[in-house]
Length: 226
Image (cartoon, rainbow, N blue to C red; front, side):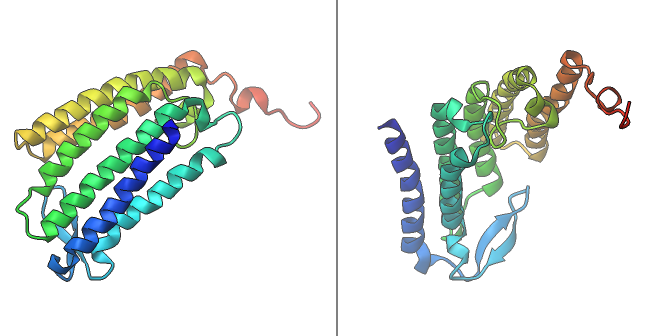
């Protein structure tokens, strides 16, 4: 029953996105602004009829993809080992895309929004939520901090995601505070860099400490006949 409720909520995000787009369609310009640069300035437009429906279509596509991923995960890397967490992550991501859909529609209809700050605030909340669940994600090919070193070792995966979860929460809080205070682009990029780069470097370093690359080609590959 829990799965059905969560999937119903995710589907509701998609359906409301399409419904809101259809209702606001007559009020939207042609072409519709569909892309903003990092400073919140419009730098991309898409003509009707596709322009207004880009985000709802993206939500629908991602919804279907997230339904398929657990079924195509290879043995030993199954998503169903953290199914409940995966469902919560699904809803969080779908909610974030729904927020972006609403912002795009509101801006197109003439609402005076600062898209850069609004998206930064939304990403801040997204990072905080993701960070709280990263440590509960087990090794897989689709969700989490996937580097060659985390995928090669359960221990490296666990340690990297524990650190990554904390960094995601801190970076998300920094993004949110910066957006609410009208902060510029630099604080956002610094927080984003901390949350994404440090875990990757850490995964390499911790793998090197634990495994030591002792199983490299020099040890395993020998000429034929030796």
